[in-house]
Every structure is written in structure tokens, then in C-alpha cells.
Amino acid sequence: MVDVNSMYHARLRSDDLKAQIDKLEGLAHHTVVNPTFDVFDAETESILIKIYGVNHKYVESYKYATVGEAEAMVNLPESAQEPQTRDIPKKGLQQRRQVLQSILTDLQALETQEAELLTGEDREDPPGPS
Image (tube, rainbow, N blue to C red; front, side):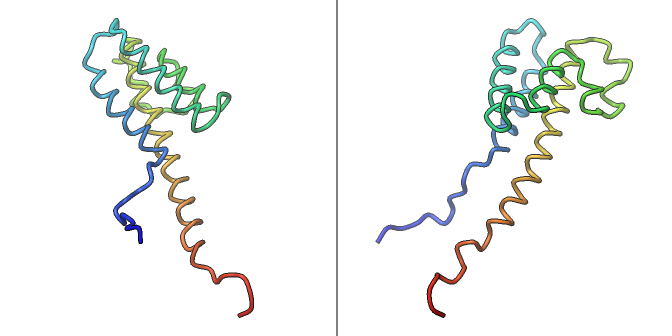
């Protein structure tokens, strides 16, 4: 008989976004000309496309956040639009973070809903006479 590891948890789609947010925190301390922003943005867009598809509003919102132009697209709170963030690269980093956190919140809610709907599905009585 095969032992089943009851501690195994399937990797969630939101795990990839969490990892990107963690990476972004590290990148925020680098200079803007650092080429890792391009790599980071490409990775993030790839993750979003894998989850939502190429034409989804989240992919577009993230693209606008990379250039600091996402306020109107995703209704970012005023804290993301403060006058002190006139520095476009800094504004872009801040908006990347906020867009990703917003997407993460929505995705986690969907994953929770999916888990609730799937819970107990394998516990139904087998087909046949009762």
C-alpha cells in the first residue's frame, strides 16, 4: 500500500504572485536603471497571462503600472497618487506593488471559493442502488 503524505498542499496560483511581490520588495531598493526590472516585469506578465490570459484587464493594468500610469485603470487609493510620487520610476514601483496586491486579493478570494465548492465532492455516495 502506498503511503499518502497528508501534509502535501497543491501549489496555488496565488503563490506565484506572492513570490513576485516579495521580489518587488527587494527590487525597490535598486536603482531604476537596473535591468532586473525588465526581467521582473516579463516574469510577472508571464504569470498573469498564464493565470488570466493575454487580453485580461489585469495584464493591461500591470503594463500601465510599469510606467506609473495605472491610477485611473484600477482606481488606486489616493496614497498611490500623492504628489511626492512625481518620480515616475518610483511611482511605477509603487503602482506595481499595489496592482499585484489587488490582483492577489482577488485571486485568493477565487481560490477560497473554488476550494469551498470542491470540498466534499469526493465524499458523495457512489452511484448505484442505495
